[in-house]
Image 1 (cartoon, each protein chain N blue to C red):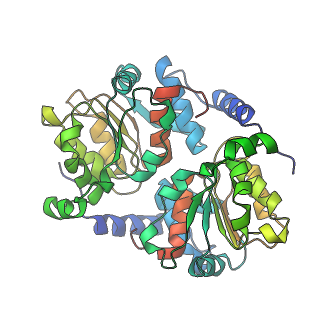
Image 2 (image 1 turned 180 degrees about the horizontal axis):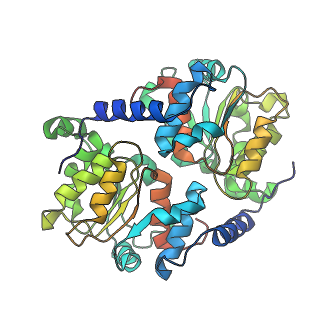
Length: 209
Length: 209
């Protein structure tokens, strides 16, 4: 079959198409690699229009990564998408839903296991990078926990997906009055691959992972 | 904060919205749960219009699963998204890109590591379920390998994503003259979460994973 097999060239052409098709002028220069990688992970140039960020979000995300902040994901799929070999500070990675005792805790808190997982990770939340690629309830619960300054992450990547609560949880993140630095994707779209792509972009810009 | 915390109710409402917004009449009855789960995983009702399948694809996928066929994914993110506890036949799961020696093999075959991973898995391809959620080259290479009847999977879930080769590799799958049973998503969209959702739907229909 006749197709392009050279991974580096595939990446180069992919990002050339993304640059040609995406309107990036409204995105701060240091977040454009993130915008492009999110577009790349979803195959959708119009994702750029749904991106939202706090002022200085690019620098804040990189600073947290370089400080070795733990990366607390909602689900294992997000964790699996992180380009680990580029984590130069050896940041630990956890999946909230995979924490021990999360089913009992979810019953106690009357919420989902994914949300309860962030309570299970409470002692690691301060200064952490929280990456939500799946569950709106996890993002809502994270915002509740972050009301306590001792449980406030350094950075939130808010990309939950779906039809019930996803858009609302991201609007709550965008409207947060806690000074939480974030990037988020408005609306129903999102998901583990886009969330991991956003985190990877903070580490490695546009290079192939 | 005021939001819905009951996971079962969130799922129920999500699928009610999906049913209200999706045009499912063109999808065979036994593939509608798959269509809905793919929509659910991406937050996009219009994905239904891009779904493609071979005749009898729902039954073929379930038969392969029930026979214990190995599930060969292109990348670890797809493998991480599989609802393992619902694999009643204990199907083994492998990620092509994570096979030992895949970097050397990619050099030898002059292709990507993900594609080479399916050559590394050649002795398990016959009768397998191949799930491609990321790399167009992996799907192209799988179709090349499948020319040999001894290397022919029982089922292909073709959901690679992106701007270079994704749409083309899925059209090649859809046009295959090997009798390969498949489901695929036309166009640039796709990804690990949708691919895993498609597989999970064959196991568990619309139930929450």
